[in-house]
Figure 1 (cartoon, rainbow, N blue to C red):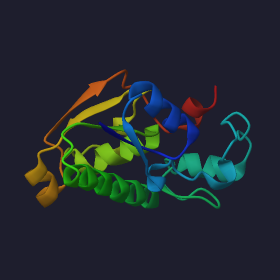
Figure 2 (cartoon, helix red, strand yellow):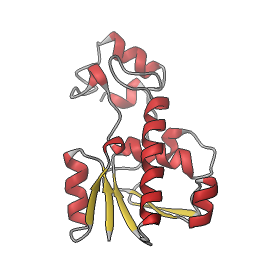
Figure 3 (cartoon, rainbow, N blue to C red):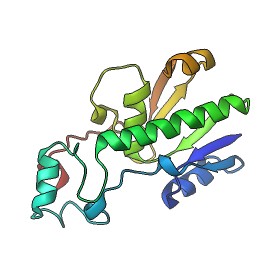
Length: 166
């Protein structure tokens, strides 16, 4: 069996817990969004940071100072996910795992689900995600999932300053 994972430690550890005997393929571009100047700081710590407040007021779409925005992030992770699925198909794998971060899950689902809903509608809580079914022909021609099913809890992500600071 095969599992694709972000290079970040928490995704690597999750891959080893859920798929202990699988071959682990690290995919650099499946890492979480680059939050630039906001990296490593909590919402509470940035409550008075004007750049952070402006970013949240803009629904967290624009690039963070010295970081990525959702459009660039979604392109990067979408390309990496698509390449990973083509790799799995070429290897003849019928079942693979992918361990990534919440933002990556939202970006991948928004890109390939075939459902026109906002990016943040795909938010899931930690250790949650989606079981996805791909039909090889449909994937190669249209890059759309055949089906998907939520596991874990969906949760709510409103991207408002009030919901990010308690």
